[in-house]
Length: 294
Picture 1 (cartoon, one colour):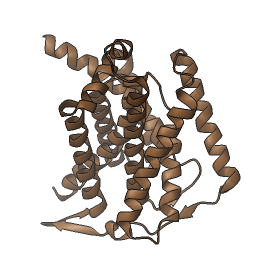
Picture 2 (tube, rainbow, N blue to C red):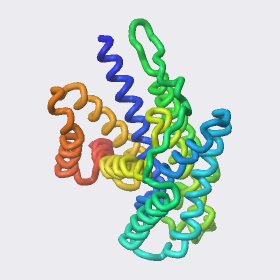
Picture 3 (cartoon, rainbow, N blue to C red):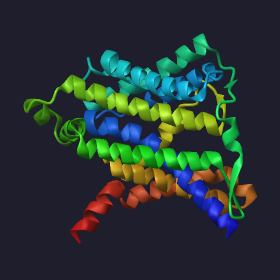
Picture 4 (cartoon, helix red, strand yellow):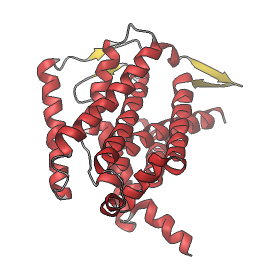
């Protein structure tokens, strides 16, 4: 029973982290129809900032990271995506992929490929005993942060004027513009929210690992894209569900596979994802929509 509880906490923690990855991609795609592969580079740059701020008090590091990530995201929108806003989705996809490669190459040129480390959040690796179950503090923190951000985002989208504008833009961007929703302000706010999620994700990544390399953003953006596709492109709730599903499957496979087969965990995981999309191409969002009609 102790081991089962540990696996459940790990699954919820990992799923919450994956959901944050996916929300950053789904939010921007849902409103701007942009699959922003450069989202991973925002995470990478934020991780480097955490290393550089490692000697500062942790509240300053947290605020600086989130603010910088939001500023980088808004800068991407203003300088790169805004001039190409009228381009088709495939062109925007190529632009985002090229931007991701350019930022990674720039990091390699200016900082180098040597891994950097930090002691930020080192104390969170110690476990908290709930009864006889040792639970790492970082897992509890990840669950709490993910739940808080998801709840805050739901409140923002449903209860605030900005949220109304964002939802209107997600439904029909051109119609929203015709009724007075400012396109530039809406897209800047969307990228700022996506950047905030990237900054928080970077903080959680560094607390879990403490080491950053120039390609650290590749895995989060891959997971985010897969979770978004599973959940249904453009569906925020679907992206969250896809993130938690990926996290749960990862932990289940890690626990269930024999030690010699664990190196194939990711291959089996993505095989299951392919199987899901073969039988349900629309993702979880389409499944939920059909279930409501029955």
